[in-house]
Amino acid sequence: MPYLMVQLLNCSTLNNKTLKSNFFHAVFFLMLLQHYSCAQSITPAGPTNSGAADSVLPGNLKPVKFIAGNYSMLEVDNLNFIYLLNESGQLKKLNPNGDSLSVFNDVKKYGNPGLVDVSNPLKVLLFYKPYASIVLLDKMLTLRNSLNLRKINIFSVNAIANAYDNSIWVFDEQDFTLKKISEQGQVIQESNDMRLFPGIAPQVSSITDHNNFVYLYDKDNGFFVFDYYGTFKNTLAFKNWGNISFSGNILYGTENNRLHIYRIDNQKETVFEMPQPWKDGISIKAMNGKLYVLKKEGLEIYNL
Image 1: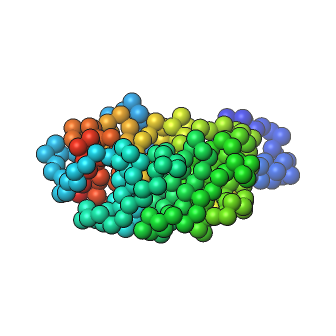
Image 2 (image 1 turned 180 degrees about the vertical axis):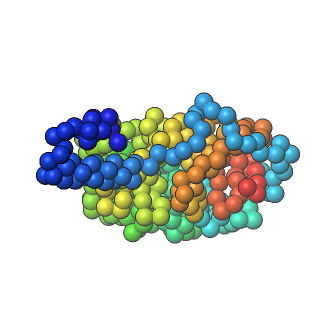
C-alpha cells in the first residue's frame, strides 16, 4: 500500500465511519486499476539484448536436407512449402522435400520484390516498394491480381501482410495508421493514428496476422499488437530482432547471433546462442519444428 495511504489510515480523522468507508473504497478502486493496467501491457520476461543466452545449441548439428542454389530471399509457409527468390527476381516454390512445384517469372515488369508474404499458402503476396504495388499470386504462383496503392491515396508503405479474412493489412507511414484493404483496393478499416496512442511514430518493418492478433514490428520499439478491429492492445518489448516468424504459439526471432523462442501462451522466453553454421546464414526461418538457414551456396534445413 502506498506510504501516503498508510499515513491516512493512521490519521485520527479516519475515526469517522464515513471517511473510513470512502478510504477503503478508494483503495479497492486503485487496486483494480493497477491490476487492469498490468493486464493490458504484456512485457515478456527474459534476458535483454546485452544479457547472456540461456543455453548453447549443440555445435555438431547436421542439416537433414540441403537445397543447392544461389538465392537471396527465403520464406516458408505453415504447410512447410518453401519459397526461394533468386538474384534475377524469379520466385520458386518447392515442396517440403525440396522438389520444384512452380515458378513466378514476371520480373521484367516489377523487378525484385522487397517483401514476400506466404502466411496464406493459397494467396502469396509480393510487395514492390518503389512502385507501391502489391502482386497477388495463387498457390501455383499464377498472377491473380495487382494493386497500385497510390491509386487509393496510400503513398508511403514499408510493410504489408495477408489478413485472416482474405484482405490485406497495410501500414500507412503518412498518417501512421494500420489499414485493411480488399483485393480490389478498397479501404475496409483503419486504426487510430499511432502518434496519438500509444504515442509513438513507429518505423514498421513487418506485419504478421496470427491467432486473432496483428503484430507490427519496429526494431527500435518491438512489437505493437492490435486486434482484428485495428484496436491497439499491447506491446512486446523485443528490440533489434531479425528473421521473425510465428509458428503455432511460438514467436521466433534472432538478435546478435542468438535465437529467441518466445511462447505467446505463457509469455516465457528462451534464448540460445546459435552454432556457427547458423550465424553464417543470409536468412533464417523457424516453422513447424524445423529451422531453415539460407546461405550463399544454398538452403540448409535442420530439425529444431
